[in-house]
Length: 95
Image 1 (cartoon, rainbow, N blue to C red):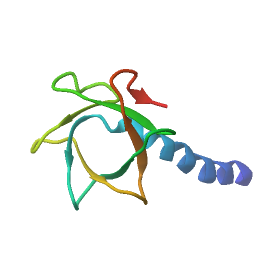
Image 2: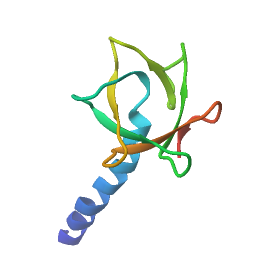
Image 3: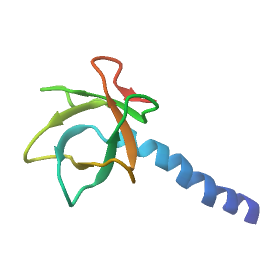
C-alpha cells in the first residue's frame, strides 16, 4: 500500500505537468504580470501547437487574443515556462 502511494505521489504530478498545456485554449490575454501560465514560444519540441483564430476558439489549440473577458492570462517568457507552444496554420492541439 505504501509503495502504491509513493508511486502515485511521484507519477501523478509528472503526468499533470504535461497536460496543463492542453487545457489552455479559448480567449487569451497576454500580460506582463498576474499571469495564469508562463509560455515559451519555440520552433520545435513544443507541448502545444496553437493557431490564432477569430472564432471557433473552443477547441484545443485555438487561441483568440482579447483585451478583456479572457479565459487565461499568459505571459511570454524565455525561460521558466509552464509549457512551450508553437504557432501553426493547421494541425493545432496537444503533442
